[in-house]
Length: 382
Image (cartoon, rainbow, N blue to C red; front, side, top):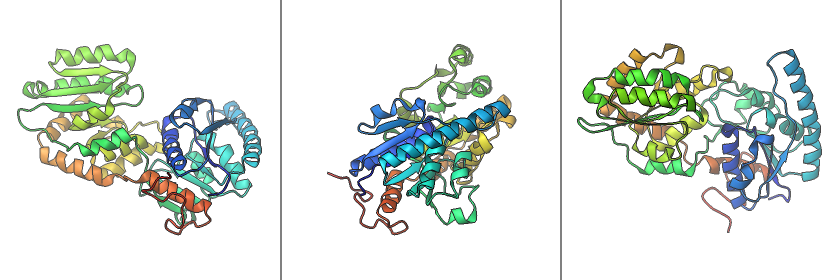
């Protein structure tokens, strides 16, 4: 391992930071020094990964009107100068980007300085930041087996690694999936992102209320909703005689997934990866305003694998959801098969794969399996 640290560059949101955190933990276990370059939203990262130095630089978001774009370009230019100065001082062994606009100045600076570079794309569609960086970096890691937006030359440098998931979620796979049986409770989990999706608050309660009364009595619902929607969702489900827990944030999602027989949720990269790792079937409703409609692509990949079902938000209605749920509950064999396909969709050694790419690149042996890595997959430094 080179004496220089491995620098991770990531946007400040969880979708970008969690893969960076997982890789940081793995590299630290392998004896590497690790730094994170991001924006001001990543304050909790240092607590979760002790020993990782955090550096903040300027970064601007492009788009949103002439003045916002101009401001974003100016911030990017400042960030690029800051990143070049920082990287010259750190002399890193490699620089890895995880997407998001805050990663762009650091990754551009790294390519300009001729450093070893990797980007990781979490979604099934190459994001705008990574689209800018892909032609310039040495290696590309992808969260989905098929990632659109990569040019032919970039595909040659791309390797499928999957997306890291939290250990508590991965552990759910050890709990066997049990499809609903006649006369037994039906565990339904509805997740809508960090604060719940308004569309689920509007449509799920009347959809569930439209099910046959004997099925309503069997339902055990865990629904995430916005704080301002929790009371009305709870009231609607109680009026239908449905046992439900409604909150804006569940602290025990792994336990609820372990019990879940069907999940209704968005289709962010982390969500899809966690469903696969847990081996739970899902009805995915992609967020329609996601950049480049990447959630729709994520959902299609999951559904095409037979792991669940995808429906656009524009087509979702209470009567349609009632029909879908009645059909799914009445087909336990179909749900069980979807759970099997979800597990097959998972990539369980994602972090090892990412670490292997980085360590091989650092050792100057990119493309040679494992080589003389400081810490090969499946091993930990003492």
